[in-house]
Length: 99
Length: 101
Image (cartoon, rainbow over all chains, first blue to last red; front, side, top):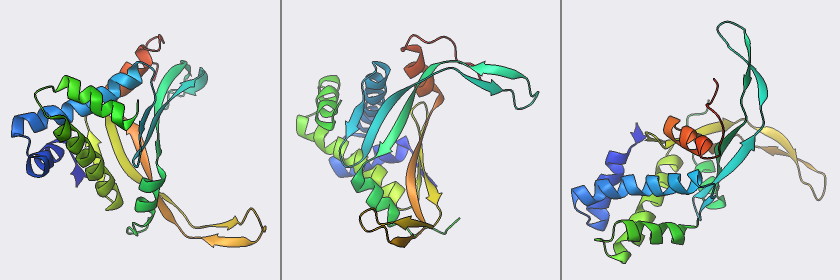
């Protein structure tokens, strides 16, 4: 079981009263606006949930796991997520099944 | 970009919606995602990424003030894995070349 865009849209329909088309478009727009900010190199801070940060990674040596051949992993910019305090506390409270 | 800037950007983009509905919708989405993770459920959004929980086993820690050892129980922490489209768009706009591996 995983939360998907379809379920998020369904909740916007039920809880906020958007119609089904508006709800679906809204969910798409939400993730698109966050992605566009990150694409511009802008950090996204969603208080209570967490921050999406950008990190610049230098080139480093890598290996093709199948052939063992050495290939450099190029320098790149990557997104990282740092959960906020509120989310961390809520998730820690989840007992889970252990691992 | 902060949550209120995100709300403003969405209100401009979906300008047929009342501002209050945009605020409510953003709050609803963030609460849905927080709720899913705190119930041990994953979140999967194609092209954006997925959120899941990673387990941190119990360990011995120290109180930094007193130096006393304390047993820290195992816990779960949220983890985000960017999706393919997210990785590509964020990297390409940085002016990097084609990603290897």
